[in-house]
Amino acid sequence: MSSCDLCVVRNRAICASLDAKELEALNAIGRTRTISPGESLIWEGEDSVLVANVIDGVLKLSTNTEDGREQIVGVVYPSDFIGRPFGGTSGHGVTALTESRVCVFSRRDFDAFAREHPSLEHKLLERTLGELDRTRRWMLLLGRKSAAEKLASFLVEMSERLDGAGCSVDFDKPNQRRLVLPFSRQQIADVLGLTIETVSRQFTRLKNDGVIDLPSRREVVILNMDALAAEAG
Amino acid sequence: MSSCDLCVVRNRAICASLDAKELEALNAIGRTRTISPGESLIWEGEDSVLVANVIDGVLKLSTNTEDGREQIVGVVYPSDFIGRPFGGTSGHGVTALTESRVCVFSRRDFDAFAREHPSLEHKLLERTLGELDRTRRWMLLLGRKSAAEKLASFLVEMSERLDGAGCSVDFDKPNQRRLVLPFSRQQIADVLGLTIETVSRQFTRLKNDGVIDLPSRREVVILNMDALAAEAG
DNA sequence: CGATACATTGAAACAACTCAAATAAAGTGG
DNA sequence: CCACTTTATTTGAGTTGTTTCAATGTATCG
Image (cartoon, rainbow over all chains, first blue to last red; front, side):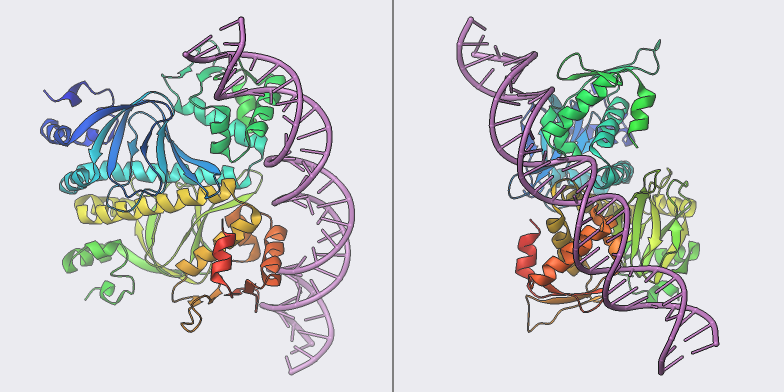
């Protein structure tokens, strides 16, 4: 029995395109690996040597300017795919935000396997098209939204993506939601293209307006989802 | 003889993955169409009904906030692919910037054809991965660069992508380059997440610094490529 | 419990924006 | 082809939102 049978993302990751026998072959060229917060799996500018599936945890994709400014260009969750298949250099680093488990492959092995399994390439294509859509939507935020709209948009997106792990929904209060952010204030700033101080000020403003509550640094309780969505612009 | 044999992008577009017979089949479900500047091929939010290859011209991909702010999220050139295969709604409009010619397919027809031709899907995947890389690099510009860095980066990127059409290189002066921009000042502002006035001021500053010359509205002569690249940050 | 990292708050500076006007280019019709 | 209108771009002056720099407050961890 391949270890994939027990995998929690078996039916959501690109692996879902494979039957039992194919899955075993893929399993043979991959291995699981844990990554601690702050640890990197891939570095910006290195030529692409490995790809991976996220089994558990949250990781950031980030680029830096020469003088050290950082921009987080993507966030990946369980079942998401990481890395740059088919050559090239990776344009961004991949770093764990929470304790993570990933299923890694050498890029060369993965490329060869993918080229022999069109259904896998198809799943990867659908995933990549979806990621491109999401990334382009984020460009509107970076280029055209105010700090207030940026943070509100961020919290709305977070509440949508952090299902299960890190996010609890109280069905009695459908307008409310409780989340545990996998980001520090600085990391939120790096996602939104702001400074840490501006992010902090926007948090306290939302709290003072009664839109959210902040029980601790990493926790956010959305008290009024409609108001938050309205602020997102 | 299928009309694809004469196509100028035959060997650069995703069609390059197909042999003569397959190409004829693809040709049978497509048709060419011209689009005038300002005319749209796809509208934001509509469900994806068609996809296309760019044969000639330059088109923008753009999203808008409810209150009318615009962000250009991508620019496509000859041989590039347009549209959202495999369902979903298109998150951005597609509008011609110059007189354009495209080879359009109904999305349903294209989807079916693609699923039967893994080599085509592979080419599309490579293209999409490349586009995602480029888009993520642009996020660093939107989130973290100053107006001066943004315009310099824009001109550098333009000089790289406008090969042949719209861009001439004088080999005697390798540090110089002459380009005809397919963008108005407002459109440049919408690419960079700035206002038209800020873009204009940065243009005149670069001109006063002797880095560029501006013979007419749409023309830019890069006088010192190294200096421009240095300003791009 | 003290040390260290992280987050918030305040005050001042600055980059980009807004609004308004001037200028230049591109169409249009006589 | 020229005068006129319209549109696009540039320039100027003042305002605003975000950043910067500095200080204070608050969790977290050995």
